[in-house]
Length: 210
Image (cartoon, rainbow, N blue to C red; front, side):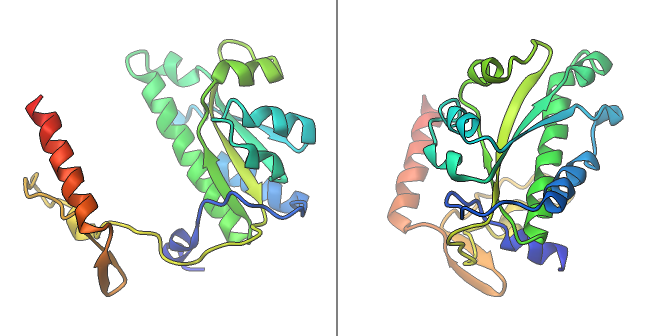
């Protein structure tokens, strides 16, 4: 599949079938993460693959108590070590975060290419997850990726701002992005109701005055 089509097709899914992920597809997703770019080739990513029902239920609470996570056939806890921080003392933590983000994006798109669905889940309590797995201090919990087959998957285009509103050429343009519009293919449609956009702009102006 064309890469752009693959990226457009991907959606975050919260409702999974009770169908196990084939081992070959699971390893394919993990292998894709291994080939992500990383600062200084530090490869800070580490993964905990969770298929045990009891552990999946425990993981939901330290991820903003998203109980649907327990129904995903696989949860992948994405961790990072301190290697980037040792290589780059000034901003190693930031570079590790960048590297982990690249690895997770590879996983999401690799899963999509195999007909699998995913959700990139934020962590609300790193300490609780560390306690579940008895993880040492030099490892950071970055995120959890839910993986499986969607029970009901939508392929409708997700709202995106038009690339022309997001891109600057050779200099920073100070014109205001039109938050009321986005572009999908050749058709321009409303991103938000204009009343909501107006309120958003008023709120932003109020914050600037403060």
